[in-house]
Image (cartoon, rainbow, N blue to C red; front, top):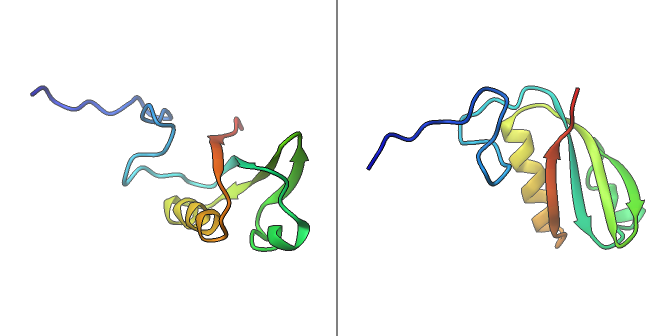
Length: 91
């Protein structure tokens, strides 16, 4: 097998998620969640802004590091929310 070559700095693997150990470093992220999330349920994400869109809810905010990012993803899962898309926003 050939050597595994990481993506260039600032790029992610094909799945769009940071590789293990990759620094996130206070970047803004957008999470697209299936359906409309109520204001009460959105209180589980005080660090993110909630925006209702057709058939989705967007959560947008600053992610401080890799642990925070994966903590948010776990929180979405634990609350029964399906993240359809996650992306890092341009500066």
